[in-house]
Length: 210
Image (cartoon, rainbow, N blue to C red):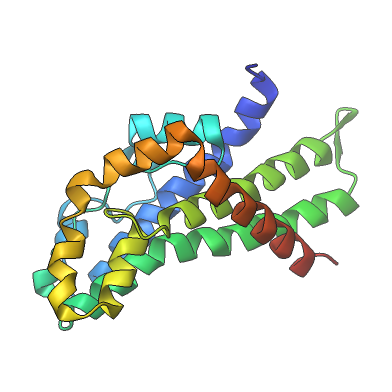
């Protein structure tokens, strides 16, 4: 059932999660010598430059699984392409984990503070928004770390595979979307991802409790 309040509170952390994720990919690639993200105008915190309509809608619905428009990267600019591509890929999920800790901190803070504005307790919806921010960012980070091409996890894992297997593994990207779709439709993706999201969310909340 559609809940307008949840939709409104979910929008800011969701847009932030997707935007920072893609911005982080582009920033690390740029710092490692690739000008492509900057030339493509993707070194930006403007959500409109990063959103993928289908991926955003999916993230709204699932509050865990989603994607944005991939930042264009040219590994030919990297000094160590396999290593640097792994670092670029790790940057997105890592940024979401950092955001999850920030949202968790403010969740606890708003739980303590009693902020009122025109006789309306602002702290409660802000705390709920931060709670959703933790879930969204953990979910986005975990989903993208799955070792299924073209997700970020595959580009990290390939760095540790034997050279003879790397090209063949990355070719699975042609079927990766269909594999993800199959796992989602059969419920296997939720079975795999949601317990991890729940565990990590609880862990983040416990570490930021004060």
